[in-house]
Amino acid sequence: MLFRCNGVHDGNKPLSSDIHHSYHIHEISLEDFEEKRYSDPSKREMTSEYSSFEQAFAYFLKKCDITDIEQHITEPYVSNINQISLF
Image 1: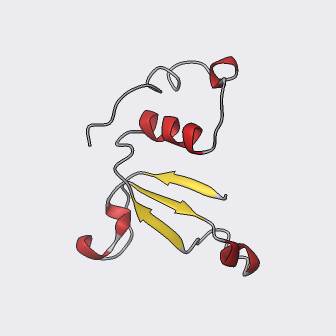
Image 2: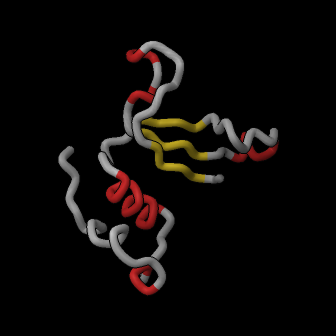
Image 3: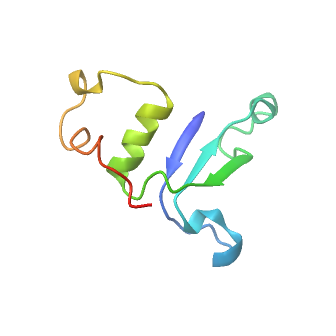
């Protein structure tokens, strides 16, 4: 997985020291790839780009430049693609 949009989940660390307690993104770097760290990418960042599965899906499509998704995937995933963020 080269790019992953995650929601809130337990990261096994205190709330203030772990991005896993917020919406966040994981992305594999070239160094991760070279060192075969596929499931534990070093590039992690919190995001306010989405706050639901539908918004994360829309963000993923936009970030990966995937177009005409409506031809391949139907409701409920494409219904909120143009939904604005609360943040």
